[in-house]
Length: 223
Length: 232
Image 1 (cartoon, helix red, strand yellow):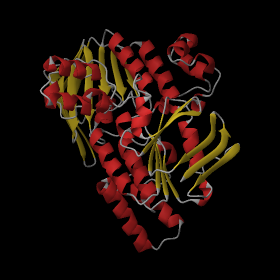
Image 2 (cartoon, chains in turn purple, green):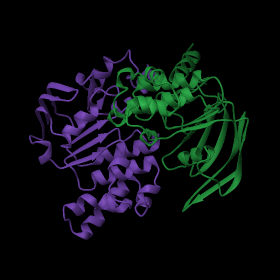
Image 3 (cartoon, helix red, strand yellow):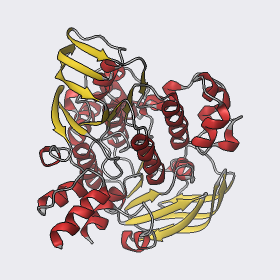
Image 4 (cartoon, helix red, strand yellow):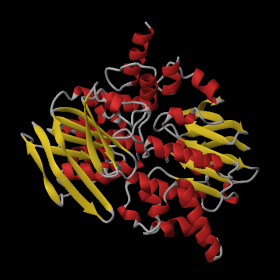
């Protein structure tokens, strides 16, 4: 359960929101507060007012995997393997277990061939994949993806979607500008101007967005 | 005006890029998977990388501009207005075009990622170069801003515009399609003839093709119109 009460932080203003779904898509125009909300939910930022509870706990007490849209700003290590290994190493997991986890995560995300690569030599999309492998490597309870699919092609994005579905995380909060991706979620939250304008199943939310460009292209073409 | 690639070859570690073909005036779309070499090709065309062998011949091209995939690499100034000015443009005009009229005094890094992309896109189009390369111009943008970027591309009306993108929902009208796969550039030819051969076609276009429709171009509305035509 994701529970938000009286949240006010920068532009974000959410009086009350309870979401009991696993895969939650957060959508909305640029500058609507999606990243701010995801930063609070991931524990990166403390809200000025109000509370967020994930699985009944404050975000800082939850094991979270987070991927931002600009992996260049967040990748810490120069080799892909070391980047992916960072959270098990920071948690002092044994070397063998760390190695197994890194290889398993790289396999799921489809990047075993990049493990020895220098991060600086990777393409934008490949960096996003390394960041994603680093986020899932230590089995997070909640996985938060902030437009991580923005630099991925169709085939790669589909593979990521499948990997995310398989992950053991109790919640996946996925902010995306691909409405066709959002349409696959269990629950959709549409934000505008810092507020939640619509929330519900994809059918409920996209029905109210039918007149806008936020309507999924595959729904539009099949009508 | 044209850009000719002749037996272009660039090797970096295990990666090799190869390509031949001619970019005529108009809008070209280069699609390809992550790591297939799209950005590397853009750097080569912009003259920022040099091929190991082969040649790039620019005929009648007197100005070239490359919009980088990550807009923060363009930023050189402490405020949004100064950033616009650093492109040799009138800041107020840029801010109006980017829908950032009241943000002139802000730090460019305090803009949201979509807002920063809008700013750099506006600067790029207002410079109006002969050869314009756009590396993932739609990433980070919401659908309304993507539609606006499409209009800017369509309304350019001159020069050579090359879009490197994997966008799957909001695309502009284009003249030619190219594919990058495993470092190899293939010209699929002009639209609409190239559309059925386009393996990276977005889902809505693939859906229309599967139903036997023959879209005139690659936009969602082209796919819908084509389906309406065969359904009578």
